[in-house]
Amino acid sequence: MIFAVMNRQELIKEIQAKKSMLCVGLDTDMDKLPAGVPRTISGMLEFNRHIIEATHDFAVSYKINTAFYEQYGAEGWECMQETLRLIPSSCFTIADAKRGDIGNTSAMYAKAFFQRMNFDSITVAPYMGEDSLRPFLEFEGKWVICLGLTSNVGSSDFQMLESGGKKLYEHVIGTVAKWGDPGNLMFVTGATKASDLSAIRRMVPDYFFLVPGVGAQGGSVQDVCQNAKTDFGGLLINASRSILYAGKGDDYMEKAREEAQRLKEEMERFL
Image 1 (tube, rainbow, N blue to C red):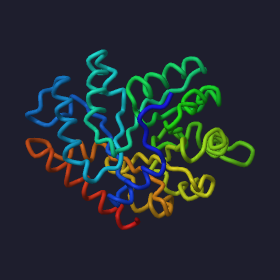
Image 2: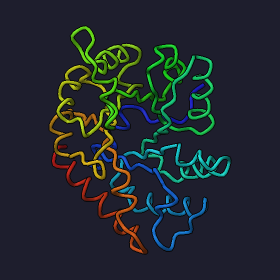
Image 3: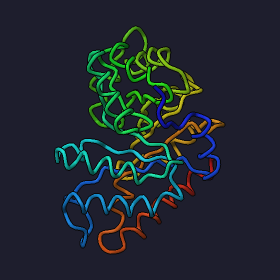
């Protein structure tokens, strides 16, 4: 079955048209909503609406971190679905759910996020191997975004371990790349690991990277682009908190737009 999709060429076209690789993370924390925005599910949804309206001129993608919505049960899932509907069809949508389980369970996750909710893509954890990713990869026109080298401090616990002359994350990326192709598979590569990005890019020159860690986590657009950008762009550079909470009061839409534009203009220098 084929669902509404954004294919590789459409994504590249959007990057070229907007001269941007910006992905806005809708990791909306009710406790951090600006003054004047109700700290309720409806307040979250209205906040998301305003952030999307303020940033869609500069963003090519939106990433919804599902945990921020799942915590509220059925109401949270409904808010997530309504937020997804607010995103322009020209923008690539990501369910940041980090799923990964035995095959029949992954098949149900794939149906939930691709068929029921109609996200373009989902983040997955590859620890359980190929059969845990295969159900996602088999959805025609949809994308799998596999954790590769992440931006958190604990990534060094496992991802940087040496095995057979390579780091574990190199084994993961090199192996997973063979399970899909550049039209249905991306990798998460953290902006705070910029020194490793050029090596990863050499490993998988034709694949898109989702790059979290710019902004509040301290990653640099310049470092990311210099180490990993390709002639087709090749990057979705995510910023969440630095955009969402740029303003603390009634100016939050204006401040979010300013920050999104600033990041977009940084990226434009490299496109």
